[in-house]
Length: 227
Image 1 (cartoon, helix red, strand yellow):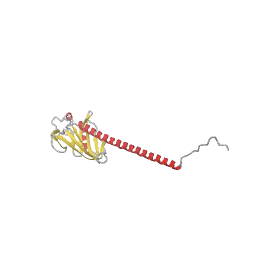
Image 2: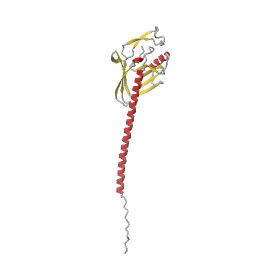
Image 3: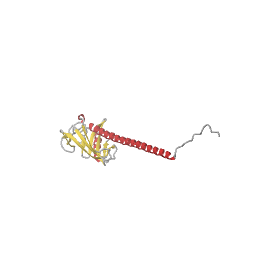
């Protein structure tokens, strides 16, 4: 009987167990890779959030310093006043003046800025309006969230004390007088002089992304203090 010259090779496939083991290995690798990618994505989101919060805080500090650096005492309204809740400022802005108020409401640090004006009557009206702020007025911005408490201190006479304490009073013209008539026999009242520096302390809590008390000292520019 003749035998074939070449014997066909038997084709051997994967068994079911081998296929299941391979699938299990692929599933484990996929799960590990997914967890790794998810961790990287989560870490990136946290880092981006922290960066945004830090930049936000830095911008608030920069704005506060800019406001304090442009304080003007025109003897029409106070250059600066802190009543324990509201920090009111009269600051130079471009060719005119505006009233700026920093205050905390519902755990938010708000900043309100009036329109810029060159008219005495408007400046006085804006100053009076700063006593009636509700947090919804045009010009109001939420500077920071999660603010639990804040306090402002003034540096006068070589020491730091509460801005609400009396002392260092100077003669001031009546608020009803204009700049042109202020030096010519206007009614005289008493008010506190501008401090040499201001210390702002803000206690941050839930919602701010930070914890603890932030302290910032700002020196008032002496060339802008017109007494």
